[in-house]
Image 1 (cartoon, one colour):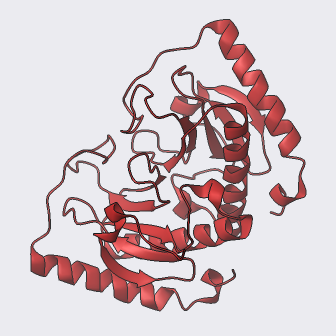
Image 2 (cartoon, chains in turn purple, brown):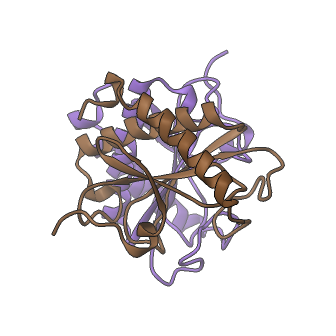
Amino acid sequence: MSFKLVPGLAKKEHITDLKLCTVLFEDNRYYPWIFLVPQKENVKNMLDLTMDERLQLMREIAMAEKVMTRLFKYDQTNIAMIGNKTPQLHVHVLCRIEGDPDWPTTVWNNASEKYDAEEKKRVIARIREALEQEKQKPEYNQL
Amino acid sequence: MSFKLVPGLAKKEHITDLKLCTVLFEDNRYYPWIFLVPQKENVKNMLDLTMDERLQLMREIAMAEKVMTRLFKYDQTNIAMIGNKTPQLHVHVLCRIEGDPDWPTTVWNNASEKYDAEEKKRVIARIREALEQEKQKPEYNQL
């Protein structure tokens, strides 16, 4: 068996692939929000990663966090590995602003509204371009 | 200024100190739940850590996740850095069981009940002992 996204993740739009993770987009215009999914089979949570893979995941979280906070306004970043409903490790990386629709509570099962098609294309393109540039840097490529 | 816990974290019980983080206890008998707080001043989120500190944080998350899942029953681990209400980086590390009071939704602002005093002492002692043993291992001490 090779790496495959579970249905809940497979339906999300693909942004780019990093050394370890594939990067997916969350279609919720209230929050700049992406997912990092390690491209390794049978990974339900971080216990299924080796220490080297965990460290590479942290490098890629750092990259994602930097790119997202450079592109979008934010007061706080929220990073989370939950996976109670979707049994494949996916790291939530999103930007929060004081006074956003769910502030200061969490975003899960809360405010959600889809992007307009054109706006979504633009946002995905901006994130993709920024990640493509950033992922070349040696500090993110030590696995 | 030296490292200091914000009030929301200072009131939580101390378990032990690791190389980077101090470990605190969440008094909620529904979930085995601890926090890792990097002992560095002015850290609101992971953007305030160097890459080396991020990697050490990941090593300590691995240690915490292993210890908690060895001590307690779990179907899934939830790991999260949120901090919308508490402006100091703290990593939630907790065990979830299918059918627990909030399953499959998230635990934040949800079911909560304090431990009995004696049970709490026992649980903290077990976590402390397991972390004290684990933290000696070289794979967690590379900062």
